[in-house]
Image (cartoon, rainbow over all chains, first blue to last red; front, top):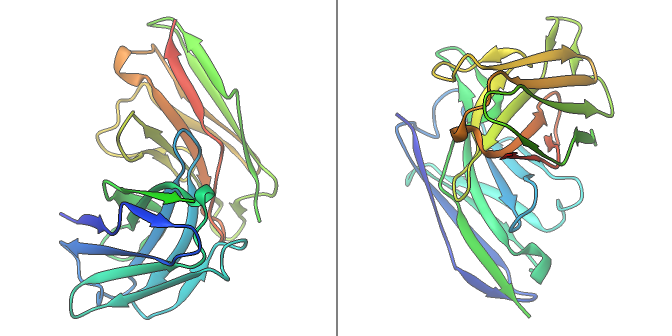
Length: 124
Length: 113
């Protein structure tokens, strides 16, 4: 069974860089075809996909945020990391790490399971 | 980017009644090669991450009660809950996974009348 746990600062200041870590169990980031995404949700608002990284290292980004985002992985620690530069109060949100749904043959592009999320507040 | 628009934004329904939530995509999410619609529905209860209800627009995830069903194709999709139960109070989201960037609807808040 796959589980994911996000970690990172609860509060960051405006203009700072956010760094979040997602630690996996139950699946290896070296597994063929594995896909992991980051998603965020401002309080009381909708979900927003941020970035994806695949086991082969290929990356995909949110169109409007791609200049601020970097997603990378540390396979030795079975972790996926996300950095977001130039943080602003509007970036206050719960940030989720998610594994793409999969079966024995393929990873798909909906999200299952999700981590519990980590709330990041950006102070001005 | 594909824009996903849900309606209504909120609704209040009596227990045992039927619920219908609509999701429209700005572009078709139907793959003509495999005849699959790349559309998923999630349920999010307060303080929890979302959970998958329906994928491929109409395939119910194992363990999801059969009162939940999905339909539609191309750009117009529907999530139906037959006989609303108290535990169905949640926010419901659609998401297209036809292409990156993956995009979500704005959510539909479902309450009990």
